[in-house]
Image (cartoon, rainbow, N blue to C red; front, side, top):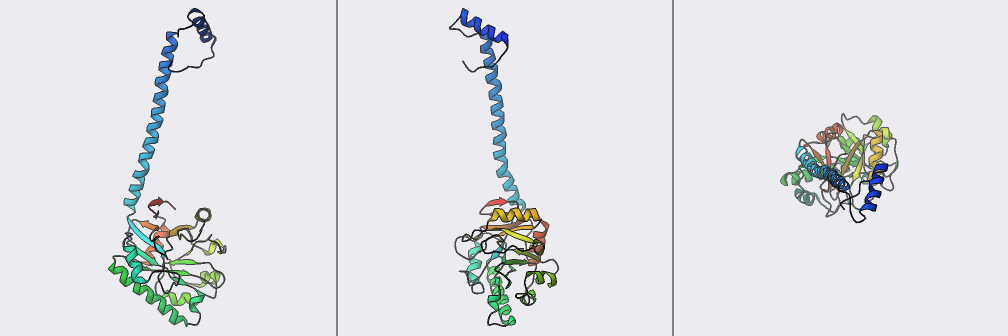
Amino acid sequence: MLGFVPCNCNLTKYYLTQNKRDNPCGYPFYFFVLDICFFVVYNKKVKKKQHVWSEKRTMIPEIKEKLVKEYPHLTELHAHSYPVSSCSEFRAEELAQVYRKTGVSAMVLTNHFTPKHLEGKSKEAFVGEYIEAYREFRHYAEEAGICAIFGMELRFSENNNDYLLYGIDEGDAYRIADYVEAGLARFRAEFAREGYLLIQAHPKRSGMVDMPLEFLDGYEAFNMHPGHNSRVGISSRIAHEAGLIVTGGTDFHHPTHEGVCLLRTREKLTSSHDVARALRSGDYVLDIGGSIVLP
């Protein structure tokens, strides 16, 4: 018997009873036919479902391939060089060489800019060192075929929060230094730079303090530093609920995790202002270890 066709009608019960009485070893031909029909219809439905799922499995790689082609330009949004960022294991030349292998077309150098850096130094001395570190990296990046972009990971004296700045120039660093002791609220109220973005770095990492969201342009929800739990899911949800820009970055300091979180854009980014415009537009995707993420 190929299958059973359930039926509660009295006629069916009568035929089954009669068949059992008249031919206890037999099986009515008409039920055999019904079973055949049921079997055929059932298998068609199963095959149709399998075909649909097969199509879906085929579509996903195609969508990913299409996004990679439409957003071919890779940019690192968060990386550090020694000695300005003393936590980094890479000097400028080494940083450029290790990123040559990742296929990035641009990198934003976001060295730390904190009150600690200004201790025992004049503003001019520290900012001069900061800019010189960027220019040194730019030299080696150009040799590696990478466009170096000026950025900053800023910290105020009020807490240990860090903020990534995009859409700024080297000359802005002198003015920014004046606000390190002033705090986020005053900085946002007074710092005049058209089109710049302030993105809170790893906002839900342990030790970070929740700040009024109106002071922020975005969250670096997808911070991929392997040594910290940045609670990316919570960060992403808060950012989406608040209508903030969602970004990501490798937060590169140590070997083996270079380029694990990159920005993909349609056009090549060549300046900090390009980065700010791209993020503000929302026309980008993230490439996290080869997985495409729509932030």
